[in-house]
Structures are given as C-alpha cells and as structure tokens.
Length: 388
Ligand code: AOS
Ligand code: ZN
Ligand code: ZN
Image (cartoon, rainbow, N blue to C red; front, side, top):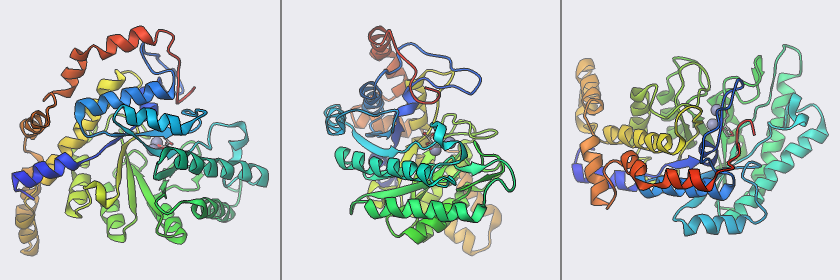
C-alpha cells in the first residue's frame, strides 16, 4: 500500500492497548525504584491510560490484571473507563503470585491447587462479563526446574483440561489469548514454552482460542515475523504483547531495542490485511518502566508501534511482489528497506494535527500539567503490580 490517503486511513483506524500494570511501580528482583505520582488504584491506572489515549488518539483500551486490579464492582469500573473515553481490554489472569503455585498452577501435581487455579481462570470470565471485555489472557508460569521433577506429558494433559474448562465457559464473543514464554520462572522446562505448544492447544480448543505473541519471550535470534506470518495464515494469531528485549524478558519499551524487528512484524500484519481492528488482533503493550517516567514511556511506545506501522504501510507491495517473482533478491530487499528507511514522523505529525491532536504527544504531555497534578494528588502512592 503506497497510496498516501489509504496509508493515513489505515493509521487512523489503528488501535493499541496499554497495560494497567505499566502505569504502576515495578522493578527487578533486585530493587523497585518508586516514582512519585504513580497510581494507587485501578481507577488511577485507568485515568493514566485515558491520558495516553487523549494524547495519541490510538490507545482507547486498557488491559487489566487480576488480582492487581480487583475491585468490588467491575461494571462500575468499566463505566468509569467509558466516561474517560476508553474501554476495558484484555483481562490478564494471575496464577503465579501465590504460595500454592510453587510447583505450578493448572499443571500442579496436586488436584486441589489445579482446581484453585482453574477457578481463578473462570472468575476472570465473570469479570469479562461485567466489564464487556472480549479477551481472556493466560500466561502460565508453570514449569519445572529439574529433569524428572514432574512428568512433562502429564502436565500437558492437566493444562489441556484446565484450558478446556475455561474455553467451555466462554461467551459467544469472548476468546482466549494463550501466551507462551521460553523460560522463567521455570528454568528446565516450561509448560507453554513456544508458539507451537500454544498453537496446538488453541487448535485443540477451537475457534475461540488464539495465540498471543509476547515479543520478549523468545530465544535470541528468533525470527518472530515468521511466527506472525505462520499464525496469520492459520487464522490463529489473536494478540501481541509488545515490548523490547536485549537478553531475556526485559519488558523494555516496544521498538526501543530493535525497531527494525518491529517493522518486520508490522509488515507481516499489513501484508495479511490484519491491521484493522475488524480483523480481531489485539495489539497490546506488555512493559514495565522501572527507571524511566511511566506515562511518557508508554506514549513513546505507542508512537514507536505507530511509526513501525506507518513504515510497513509504505511498502510498495506491487514492486516487492514483482521483484520476488522475478527472483530479484537485491531489488526485493531494497523495496522493503526503502519503506523502513522513510522518515514517517512528518506524516504522523500531520495525521495528528488533522485529528486535532498535538503533533508531539510526549511534549504535549510535559506541557499538560498532568504529571504535577498526579504527583500532588497521589502523595501516598503505593507500589502496584509486579512485586506488589
Ligand atoms: C509474563 O512474562 C508475561 O509477559 C505476561 O504477559 C504477564 O502476565 C504480564 O506481564 C502481566 O502479568
Ligand atoms: Zn506478556
Ligand atoms: Zn513477559
């Protein structure tokens, strides 16, 4: 697609979901550095997410994490979000922060603990019913540290049983997003370590189960855009957790470590005509801002995804496919690189101005006074989210 009006139209329709936990204090296992003004409640996280949407125009939903965002009345929380101009997105489950889950959650050898974990998954569907959320996101930390510690195959059976129970409880317009992760916290074997495992379980479950690709969850050098292309072809790509990694699950800002990789991923999306929200992919961020200011970092990340998308939309498909058909190796590569090397910032600034937004959302945030306001209002800010 290189018709500029079509590019702009596609960019106007783009949607990126921000995660509630990214607004809260977070850190590594060595230290959490608290920041002034961080949210103390789910409502305050939603307010920050609404600010990001107000300034970027393309982040109209926020993912919640249970129990970090547990409230008494989820219907009221959803209304609160709507009143601020955003909606509740994916509901993230948590079966990793409990003493009981030392040997696993849904794959634990103890049936009582498996029941408890599965009940949490079902409870998350109740929350979806109350909030209107369509996406149920599973990331299982389950795995083992030592060969022989538990039976690899039996653990798959237990996983399948829990997934089935959750799947059967889904409403017509609800779906499961099954995330995978190579390692950590388990070191020897993880029960959902890769896209193939996630994909196979999703196929077994049925059409309402899809894979979530967290860009930080692969071995170094993994060709993530191949995974994207494969899952798109199978109709099984449901969502992304965008972030950047250098070494492991670093959860740095999307597009920071390797903007070229993000472009290559977004090209596969554009190539499959899967960018529009109607296609159904939830483009989420899953990040932690440990040392940098949180709201500006989230704005920056949204803009990084938008920039990668704009470049992907500028790829001259006809020229690319012609070069590929002709076996023109260098020509084909040059078409892709031409798009990647285009400075799309003026185009995006224009797009924002057309929509009545500030062309520079980060600068607009700094000028807005919002940071001073939350620092004053949230004087007793507490840690929420990771390490809470
Ligand atoms: C964990 O490594 C995953 O990326 C999950 O998506 C996790 O659930 C998320 O970070 C919020 O808990
Ligand atoms: Zn993730
Ligand atoms: Zn992760």
